[in-house]
Each structure stands twice: as C-alpha cells, then as structure tokens.
Image (tube, rainbow, N blue to C red):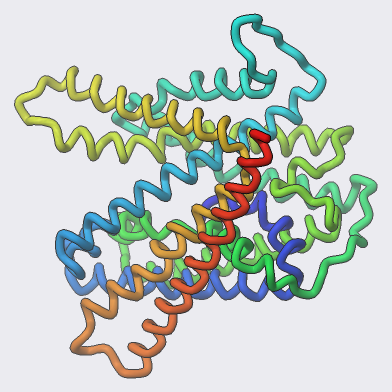
Length: 383
C-alpha cells in the first residue's frame, strides 16, 4: 500500500465527515476483493506474469496499451505528489532558514528540494535494485514512524483530541474519494508478488490480512488526526503537528526521507521498458546510458511539475480518481469478467458490473472535482 496516502487521511476524514470513513473501509474491502480477482486470472493462465499481461490476455493489444498507460501515469503522478510532500515538509524542517542566490528567484525550501532530488538522481541509474533494497524497508519504517509520532502527539503532546468532526459533507465526497482510493493503489505489483510466492494459493489470505491491517491503520490515523486538529488540519498531517515538539521534527524528517526511498523503485521500471525497446545490437554501456538518461529526465520533469503545481491534496486526489480507481477496482473486475465469461455466475457478474459502474462514477466525479480545485488554486497563484 502507498504510505503517502496516510498523510492525507485525517484531512479527508475532516473534510468528508466521519461518515466518509465508511467509504475508506469500503475501498479497503473492495481492493482486497479485486486483488483476489487478479490472483484468479493468474491462476487460470500460468503464462501471465504481470498486470499488463492480464490486460493483454483479456482485451488484446488495446488492453495492454491502455493498462500500461494508466500504470505509468499513476507512477508519474504519484512521484509528483511525493515531491510536493518533500517540498512542503522541507519548508517546515528548515523554517526560518534563508539562502539567497542572486541569479535565481526561488524560495529556500524549493532550493533544498532541488538539492534533495539531485542527491537521489544517481539511484535511477541503477539496474540492479537489490543494491538499494534497504530503501524499500526504510520507506515502510518511515510510514510506521509517522503513525507513531501522531499517536504520541495525542498522548503526550499537550494537544487535546476534542476537535469536532462533521457527520457528512457530501459536496466534498468526490474529492475525498480520490484521496481514500490512492491509499490502496498497489494492484500493479500484485501479479509480481503472486508469482514470487512459494505457495501462491495463500495469496488471497495474505492480501485480505494486509488490506485489513492497512484499513484499520488508516482509519485510526484519520480519526486521530481529525480529532487533534479539526478544521485546521492540513492536507498532510505532519504539517499540522506542533512545531516545538521533538516528535514533530521526527515526523517531518520521516516524511522528507520517504520520497527519496521511492524514486528508484518507481522510475526504474519505466526506464527498463525503454531499454527493452532498444536494438539488441546496441552496446550495454550505451543501453545503460540511454536508460539512465530517460530516468533522470523523468525525475527532473517530476521536480519541475511539483514546484510549479504545489497542491498536494489536489494532485493526490486527481491521481486517485483519474488513475488509481481504474487500476485497483475497474480493470480487475473487467479482466476477471472477460476471462471467466463462460463460467461466471449471474450474481457474481452483476456484482462485478456494479463495481465497474461504482468505480467509474466515483472516478469521474473525483476527477472533475480535483481538476476544478487544481485549476482554481493555480489561477489564484498567478493572479
């Protein structure tokens, strides 16, 4: 599951109302179900190895192209959100610090963000990710640290958990739904996990337990953050925590370091696709050069977009509504229905079709809502 989503869960609960948490739990349950559907598709055809293969087997070349486009779009937009988060939290970590460079007009924390991304740049040139596999574990630990620090703020930080949470704010549900579904968007990785398991028959059990734990984790964090800060809660919970507390500094640094652990693992697979398209006669050094250059250019583009459009909740919500809900709910249901058309029961068919309609409904509404807010914020910035 994407740890980035936990930062916005308190904001989503506060703005959607406590009743919107049922939508969060519902998405968790549905994503556990659709992960099972992907496993069933893989079980039916042992030759299928990844998400794009399932799409190709179900809907031919067009299916592969569409699924691949959504996968890469999700990765790219998620990295923009990570970098916005990096920029925002660096601003808090180094609040009051000023660097002045006469020939460039950027803020101190924007300069620090550029430096941080440049430091991470060499990791996208690596071909063997096992050399930096510890970064993946570090990313998971950072998510746990953020949860613990928010809990410590409630228990020992002197902040009372008595802020009001509205019951339900229907007008905000479309945008909130994108924030919620993004937290569960990991379905692209599930085929690889399924294939790497010694006993793939246990995949569904592991998936249900994982989604159950993550759903409880996010729900608890959402209510805890909303009760702590109420209407003043930021779209990133770490930005609302009292600045004078040492646990706040720990949370901020954990959030700053998280994106740096993600860049290589998210971007290298895209660069690898480019490498596969290169002529086999090309030397390995030239292939590595082109591959690394593509990864570096993509990361620099991510940086430019993050600094130009620094609206975390809008970009994250748009990613969830436009892309994540398709990859996590709509497409798995469509794949399964197509592959098992001759065997699927009428109740199950009706259920899958309902989920496709449900996902499309929230996807369209959420995309419109997040896009509208993003454009409005961007216009206000340049007024």
